Image (cartoon, rainbow, N blue to C red; front, side, top):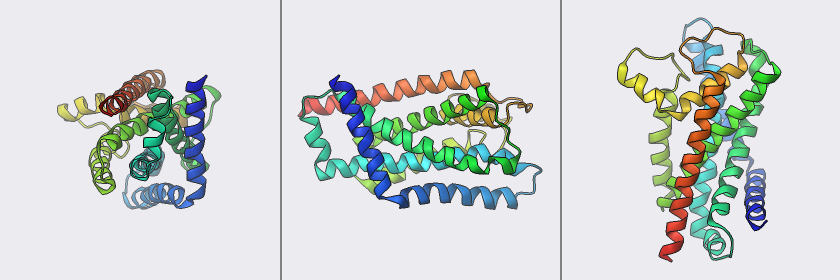
Length: 248
């Protein structure tokens, strides 16, 4: 029972902090929509705005996850996490609460951008839409867990942002978010082990369930792969936190 109470408390704290700082939402959503508007209109490829739309949603969520996990460094410097760490609660619950908070906010932002889905010819079917929501949550969980792991090991906020951008932007660009699968063997191999590939694919399958999407992973495969990445990075983050507690 203590585990779930800890998770809920930290999850709720993340939502309250987000509500009090609306600029986080505006920055994440606004930047993604600006990319979509400029690139979608500027690149003279037929239906490119529709193709780029799933990548836009994932980009917005990616920025939200970065902002959410950057707060871990702030919490450590302010002493909040130190006080939580000495409390008689599970370290795994602390990790889950923080990650769930960031993933929930990112998923909500992704759903907000669906307001524009009608402009690109998206159609919603119940099964595909539920898969879409699951894809949004799982890719948010994966990126937040990855960010948690890095934020726990990096003490500098500017350094954290630099590392996250250096890692996540190339992963996002090489996921099929901007362009279709390349014929390059090494890039194909990278896309196969890239969680963003399955996040974008899941969103694309959910938005366009009746479209012919060659070389795009199926919805069920995408969900299972994302679930695997989510479990992996959650365990990795929990191990890092446990080791920090042991050192103290």
